[in-house]
Image (cartoon, rainbow, N blue to C red):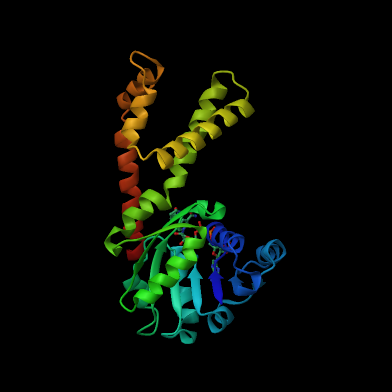
Length: 264
Ligand SMILES: NC(=O)C1=CN([C@@H]2O[C@H](COP(=O)(O)OP(=O)(O)OC[C@H]3O[C@@H](n4cnc5c(N)ncnc54)[C@H](OP(=O)(O)O)[C@@H]3O)[C@@H](O)[C@H]2O)C=CC1
Ligand SMILES: O=C(O)[C@@H]1CCC=N1
């Protein structure tokens, strides 16, 4: 039995993804404190919602998707019900396995995972790393579970803050670019619906090229950039405005925020 504790944006994406990939509603318990949201989740997915302590008593695998700021109090609440036979998977940004383990009885296996919201469409990217009491079977179990909603990569925990900054937050960077392109089209007088269609299909097509061609992005970009043409003019402006540096700084800021979350 799997318990998802915290069914907000990420928890619900994982819930929907797991159910879409063959887990039955009877396999999954959900803890969600707001009664109205819990009712919506029961109606939408046919799952049972239960208090966190009941979820800990009944499930063997706990998928914790609360905000980092709420996580440690939750662990203190459910810790009396958790032992070595459980597997705790936290998707919280920043919280290290050392911090998570310090709120659990010694020996409870903990996996730190960083998924992203495309899990909702079965196209997620999740990185996982194990803690002090995690054996290969625990990582296999985490990989099997999260593999139902996309790809899974095992990384050393020293890379998890960078993972968070790149693939955890990454979808937001794409939406930011999409939003900017749509607004540029609208500012030039194009109907919004047309701009949205152009941008949506361009992003999907570009992603498919990246995925399917096996080429480095530089090669794909050069193929679009005709000598003396429109793309070269656009890229020159992006470089003039320091967009490459801005992106690098943004990803570093996300990584630093992830690091800081363990210390707050
Ligand atoms: N959003 C994303 O793209 C990603 C998020 N994450 C991680 O996922 C976690 C959740 O983020 P996100 O989904 O964006 O945030 P949300 O605020 O959308 O979700 C948090 C959920 O936890 C619930 N909650 C709060 N306290 C408790 C409690 N004591 N017991 C059970 N549930 C509780 C909240 O309920 P209520 O609203 O009623 O307070 C809410 O539904 C974070 O740790 C984040 O770092 C990781 C990867 C990607
Ligand atoms: O913004 C956040 O903190 C979370 C972690 C990665 C994506 N969303």
